[in-house]
Structures are given as C-alpha cells and as structure tokens.
Length: 332
Image (cartoon, rainbow, N blue to C red; front, side, top):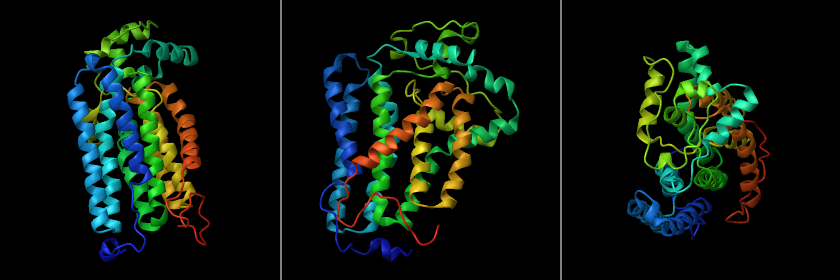
C-alpha cells in the first residue's frame, strides 16, 4: 500500500457522518442531558460539557477536511481520532456514575459465594513469579495495541469494510460506557482499599454508598515491581484509571469483539496473534486487582452479545458495502 493510495481522491466519497461518528455523537448528546439533570451533584460538570463540545468540533473539522479532499488518509484520521478519544471518555464515566451509590458490596459477595474466596485477593499472592507477573501485565497492556492492530488490518487489507470494523469497535465501547454509568462498580483495587484487605479476607463486604464520589485511592498493583511490562502497566494505570467500569470487564469484552472481527475477516494470522493476548488479558484483569473474576467471565458473554447486536444493526453506507463474513479465495 503506497502513500499515494491513501492520498488519492475516492471515486465515491461519503457525504455525511459515518456510523462510528454517529455513535459518539448520540452518546455525547445523551450524557449531556444526564449532566444537565444531575448538574449540581457532579464534580466537574463544566469541564465535561466543554469536552463534549470539543469532541463535536473535532469531528466536524475532520468531516470538513474529508469533504475538501475525500481520501483514505483523512478517513483513517477520522477513525483514529475517535479511537484516541476513548481515553477521555473512559474516565468520564466515573464523573457521571458518582451520582449513584456504589455496588461493589453486591459483586464482592457474589464473588465470594461463587468461588468461596476473592480470586483478586489471592491470585497474585499464590503466583508471585516475575514470569507470571510480566506475562499477565503484557496481556493487560496489549489492550489498545490490539484495537489498533485490528483497525489497521481492516484499513489496509479490507478497506471496503474498514468503516464497519470501526463502528463495531466504537459502538461496543459506548455501549459499555452506558453500562458503567448506571452500574457503578469500582473493582477490587478501589473497594479493597476502602474496606481493608484484612476485612475482605474475612468475608466482610460493607455497603459504601457514595464513598467514591470523593475518594480515588487504590491499592498498589500487585506483581513484579521491577519488571519492564509492570512499569508500562503502572504508567497506564496512573494516567487514566478511575474508580469505575469494573463490571463487566471492558478489556475482556473488547478482546472478544476484536477476536470476532478477526474471525469475520478470515485472518488466521491476526486471530492467532490476538488469541493468546486475550487469554492473558482474561487472567490479568483479576491478577492485577482491576476486576473481580466474575467481571472477566461476564465480559466474554456481554462482549459476544454486543458484537452480534452491532453487527445486526449495521446498515452499509453504499450498496456494495456489506457486513456479511468474507469469502476470500485465500486465508490471510
């Protein structure tokens, strides 16, 4: 693929906004109403409103650039901009769900009833090996690279379905964000910190109510603290983690969506690169205490359901576009 192929004008450019942009706009407008309703109970409503305005303006600017020069490069930038914005939308869910009481006591109790213990509390203690820590940390930090890899693959190898792929990925994220707003579960690293690990080990799971409205302290991430990948994980955590989005695990949900997209593209190489990382990510979610084990398990089922829902709802922009599985002569 040459640079000129990315810069050449498309023969039949898309005139309006794309599906992946519409899902962001619908989410932004819906949460704008939410902010208006709960304005006095939110910590930073003005900043949140301004962020939504800027996201809209950026989307409009990139759409305008595409209208002036409709080429693959600018369309790719339109997709990349929305994916990069996810790092802003994610912590924003914390700013919204603080208006509801915390539910971790329910999920920690379910965890205890199902496993007879708290896997997130015991996993790293029973497997302190640097190799285990580094491998599971690798699985967790591969999250965004996996997203980029699938989007890039579709852009380069199956550009006619690139917009479909982008819509599925972004649509899945925004559906998860809706869940996270109305289901405020912060996960073990925050809940255990607030309650105390000694109390948790004894099976005490108190209702903390609105505690996390004003508290964001978390446990130190367990693992091999001198490890290179562990440091990458720690930096990512410090940069954007908030007490939010524990159930279901978005990491596991999105990994299922990405595997489904790789399978739909009939790319064995891509699928088998993603698969081991997804397995590592599954166990990493509760090894590093970001999630309860039930969050990761639920992520598999919720991710599968959302993938098929979004696939069913997709309507091609043009008659020749399709969201049916590929039937290539060769498997890439």
